[in-house]
Image (tube, rainbow over all chains, first blue to last red; front, side, top):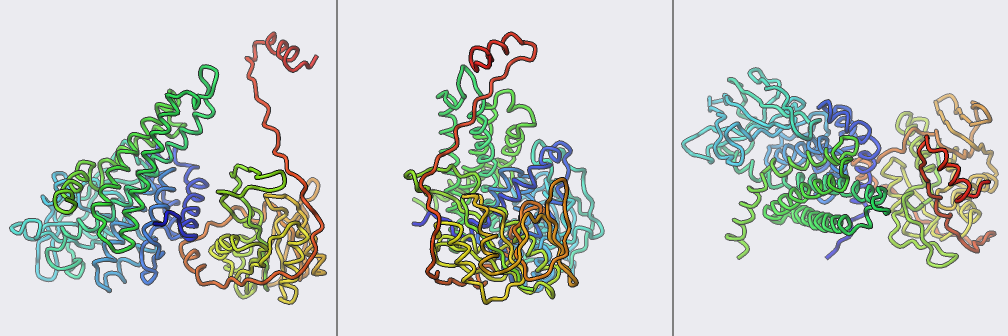
Length: 382
Length: 248
């Protein structure tokens, strides 16, 4: 067993760290306050290759492994999860989905600009009444011979406005249940698409989240990925990989808050000594650090399994579940260690706490991860 | 034009410096990086390599050091250097570094050699000048700007109270400092990927002398503590100055 990173992995980690600590930190508070989309950061990260870092160079991607992706996601998320969620959706949901299941023509047309980061993608699965229960799709893709007619509403869509390419999950044959669901590549500017207002979120406020309405949107048949009825399986397989990205994001949020808490505890004095010397604070830090270390190992194991082309669905669920819970725990404790300072924006930890909350909810809630893990216990492990 | 950038392999600037004995730096757990001034030089050289490839045909990086420094050279290749040379030696002083570089590149016809003003570990500020002398090459120090076009090469030097701008002839060695590039370039995925296959040549060291010996290191004294006194409380200020600092 080898716990060391390769030189290349270290280089990617350092590149992500340099960008985050040099550039993202400059305006992260302002963008959070104004809920402003990080246009220039997305462009810069695209030029560095982070937006399609997992895609084969044949399709203009960075050709990096999933372990490198975890390292990069952690570094970006230590500073700014609004940016890392844009990166995560583009990489591990949209690019991964098209690269794994699309045709050569679809990859040429849709994947290449996404891998270069010239275009950004969005993954449209959730609906007003279909979140965790993703089989209950109300959005319909009616088969009209040479095209589909798309109608319905999608909710909580990250990159809803900034994306150029939508991957839309919709029901074609309701009588077949989840086996009637398809996944379609849709041009965001196609006639009949309209957006709901920018969601005023608790955290990750600099990423743009919208509901998306489809009203008789014509989608050519060649835009369907996979066979008829492949959509639900596509969504589930893609989300398995997506969970690694969000797990690494949660890990980064936790690590970012932890580092700030350690620094503060070495500077802040109470009762005549730095608060680090008080066991109540030191033990908190020990607990935070231990949970983070476990989260990192879970993330890296899931990434490693994916890189080895071994089943990683359960491992990614464990990683996402534990990392998200750890992020919530660690950020809450980081605010507590900061006391009053932790409750004001300038010290970042309250923002990290708001960001942590979302990692327990999106790309599969913590409870859904528990469902996946418990099913694996019953079906696979014992 | 062929540009050579000399790069030092130094501990990360946030490293906690420890010594295993009075004369030996303890490198356990140290993260090694490209010397920041060298990284800026390389960034500037690569900018010209990319913007005017017909003029700047090649950027080479060189380091004198053991095998562990190859990670630093790979990063330089990821940033955009075309190839790298490692002279296999563990140099003990600045002269040894300059001598090994001179011997390694003497016949390679570099038009422009860039050296950072100092390395952030030993801060000797000596290699650039020595290397110019050993190669019998003119050199300029305190360089904070470089502009290369098809027609000429312009150099900015920091001088007392301002800056001088020089039009220079090649070949030339420049000892560069902050300002040469805005920020060190972050390597891209494509750069990291192509660095895998770019040439990294290892040259064996030639016999040479060492003229300096380190006899000991001392860590700087811990920073004095700062005591805040309320601006209104002049009596307390007087008491501290009299009783604690014994200023009067």
